[in-house]
Image 1 (cartoon, one colour):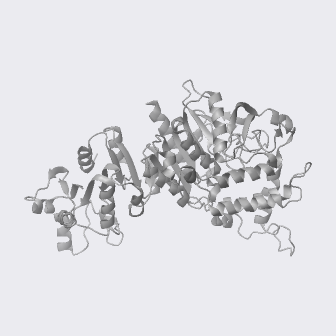
Image 2 (cartoon, each protein chain N blue to C red; image 1 turned 45 degrees about the vertical axis):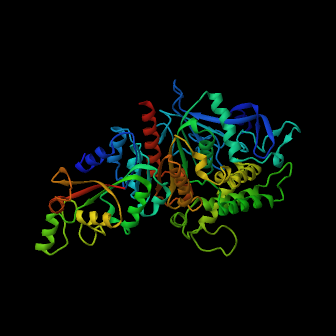
Image 3 (cartoon, each protein chain N blue to C red; image 1 turned 90 degrees about the vertical axis):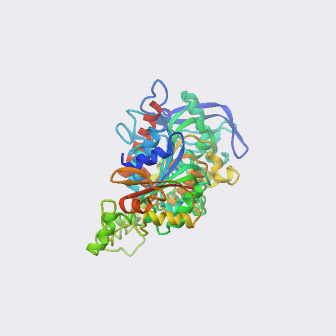
Length: 197
Length: 370
């Protein structure tokens, strides 16, 4: 399993109620359910992926997070997970608000636009950055609202969202983000993972 | 036909069932059929509920009509609901005309056919009457309850009435409350039957009215695109228009055929009673205006399926069930299957649909076997 999911699973631990928003083919859900005895639910917009999840026995509903989150009651999950999708919403602010409403805690991961390769790509090539984490061209990318680790932290600060944990993935290694190393991590990490409420 | 009707499997329920209308029935027959073998643990049973014009013969060849069972694409050896592995039970609904207690049966008090003196029944009555069959078969907990359209309504009602009696629940292309549009369409069918001068006559049946009802209903089971692709404006007689009211267009002739063959196998009064039961179905109202209450603490795994081109029970109505289930934290999955075949999709060869139910049932079975 990829480092990101490993980190998320470690935060969640066992026997919790978890909603995976944009759960894809259910890889994380399956792990949380089978290995950690969590009571999982998923939301996924792509039919073929929903069908894959159903085949695996996972309770996943087809739907778009921007339209479907309202139906989950307040604080009905211990954790709500949003993996690398926030930047793809039309209204990430509203989605985040919903996630915080539904979950006692929310885990959000973001591809870091401040990563050095991204910066250099724009600086030297003068074209929109494409990396392993951001493989699409500007005209077909689903990512409408890219941000950096620093941007996300600033956003939480502005919105009075409490960050309980900040982690990052740097070349497949997990580490903690602190106030001290933020500038450094914002350059060298591909991914930020935040536990917020 | 009559000798074969006698061979239909039935139980006679010797208990008294109080119907929603307030009347009681007792010593009444419930006709059923089973496919596959019930295993020793009795944990591989699936109860399939039929739709408005279906019957207990969901697989193989229907011994009465000699036509394929209504769910032959889904039920059978090696099929999505694999009868090599699972034991499928299907009962003719209360009010039906394939051997269960209904308007076509003799009223023991008058020794005459019930006809329109049969009590008005509800979806809840239908489901409660089938519970006796499960008791008779000694099944305490089903692997699954499944059904489309009115069958789906019975699935929902079953989940609400007997939450502990099934591991999984599959309502397909249905609604928790019959919509105004659907009530309107049912009323159209009923009026067609009641306008037939042969209705309520002792030695004749309102075949024309019933055929018109079926024709109108049949249109609602298809999609505009499906009709366009299958028939378009194609003429019956390749030549040209006949400038008459004969069936010039293939679609006309198709509908006439559907109407004509339907009257051979279906009772007009059953049609009245069953459509009425559908119209009265309002699970939300049954549970004090909150559909979630119907599923509170229900531990069953729900799999709701709708079809993109179904305008009779559109995705949005199926989604209302999903929303109610999520509101009470139920174990729910939902997918809208892409299909041009309209409401009828659940009866047809729609691979994504069949794959979904098959994989869902198999995963549920594997989980309980763990």
